Amino acid sequence: MALTVHPAFCADGHSREPECATNGHRTLVIHGLWPERDEPRTYPHDCPGPPLDLDGALALELADFMPGVAVGLHEHEWAEHGRCAGLDDDEYFDDALRLAQAVDAVLGAKLTTLAGRATSAHELREVADLLHPGFGASLTFHCRTLRDAPAAHRREPYLIEVRQCVDNDGPLGGPGTPLDCGALKRRDTGCGSAFQIAEARR
Image: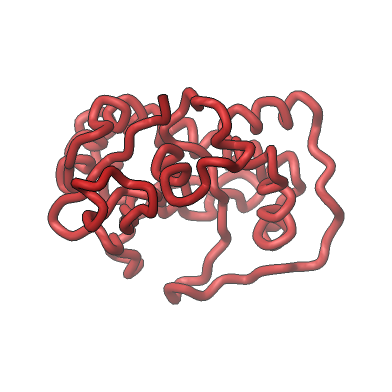
């Protein structure tokens, strides 16, 4: 499960994108849910299947957690990844929402509190474990410098994405149990010992 840190996305040259045009109310938003093989950086993609046709109520709920819906991100994610998940489109995006809500419940408020400040992967895992013991090991953190970062922090890494490793032992073979990412050779990237949390646009 991949969640974008929305203020960081918007501060990386995307400020004029429709999804960044207004001050969003979420720090973590859905990027996508990606079926993967055990070997890192290998995954099925672009599988044959039906076009996206979401239930109307689900589509509205998804748009709240996936502002990229404004530019068709949900259609791209369904075509590239969702049709390979062995689920229908409603099941796939319902699972993505459930996973996003769980990660947001653990980290969303803390990331909002940390906006404009530095933190570390260790600190964020500790926060996750306090609320949900063992949850921190299921997360990886991904950072890079941002094009529109404040001048004082232009060369420092910013958290851009949080990913969660999840088994496919859920209903219908969908995502179920959180997994230890380290045991699967999934690692943090680009974050170093500390990184910045972007502030939302004012």
